[in-house]
Length: 95
Image (cartoon, rainbow, N blue to C red; front, side):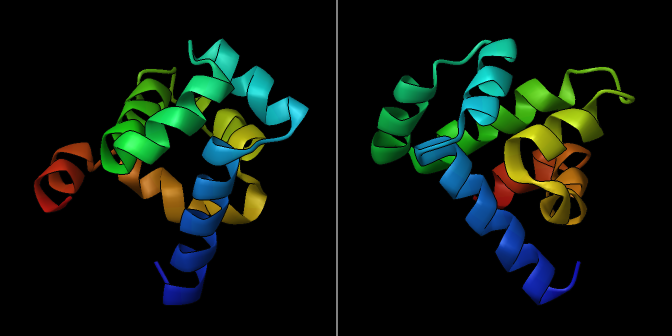
């Protein structure tokens, strides 16, 4: 993933978790999260919170994952975030 694409993806990831539009809040709710609690959890354990969100998305049917990523983080972030879903063990090791 190109550096600029990765940076945009991470920025959008952080913005979605700490704030979030109504659509993002609904998507988090669909995944079983409360957006206000996620924002608070990011203050306490950002890495753990990010992993929980990614793990939840990775458990979705493969056909639904791009739609969830788009709803949460925007179309331009899919290319940066989607590869993380298949490399969660590596991500955990490097966090």
